[in-house]
Length: 329
Image (cartoon, rainbow, N blue to C red; front, side):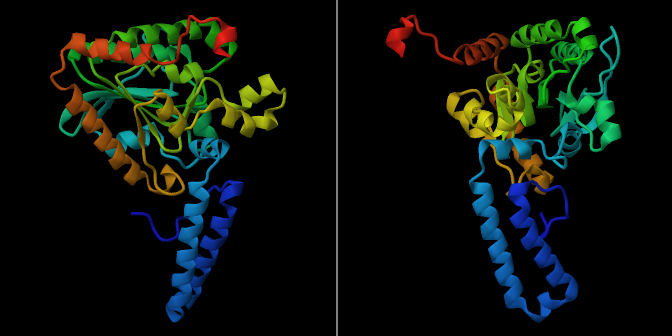
């Protein structure tokens, strides 16, 4: 359970009124006035709760993007720790190196063996440099494909957590076949003969997300986002001004609610008020329930039927019209 007043942490500008009330409540508790004046404390708690519901209930797309990037937000390894036991980490693509921005391995979920994959960011500068800020290289996607083929061979379900600003765009990554690795993964995941569950837990950036994003069920956390480009990148292209990222975020329709409406994702998983970092265990339990529903849905499903459903799921994305453009407009 979350405490009445969460630990101090990173705050965005739109959260500062909440932080101020929380600080007042903390001071009330420290000085002992909370016990001497229970009514004042009760009123402050009610005011704080009302303010939270108002602010977090009226978030703009850009504010949701900010929450998806919150430095205290749970990452893939956090959820693996909550959900799986007996985890054996697997490393390397057998061609170049081990990409620390994309982690994976075998584990046990609710008594069932499975393979788990996901992007991993860092908590501080040193770890972020090690994890390349969650932006995978070609060897990361090749490692992911190697592990998914292992899962197919062992007939294990695959659990995937997406959280990346995008694939690493550096010269070295391009020289080693970044685009080819992502394209190959998408092709092979489309015909992988085992159930694939995917959840966007933070950022779902462009091809970096799609490189491990083709599966039978795509869920997304309430304050995560999934987009063809980052809001800053979109603003730089359209308006030559990255400061217009909030406008781009609204235009891109990248929020969980938009994606569910368009059929890009199959499920939106609730987060606590303020984001997943406020109560990671709550989110982990919601994720657990979602995965269990998926596994129950796919248990006993013939491989041909599984692949056909996956094919149809992605074929129906977007709209094609043979009418002339003028008549459509």
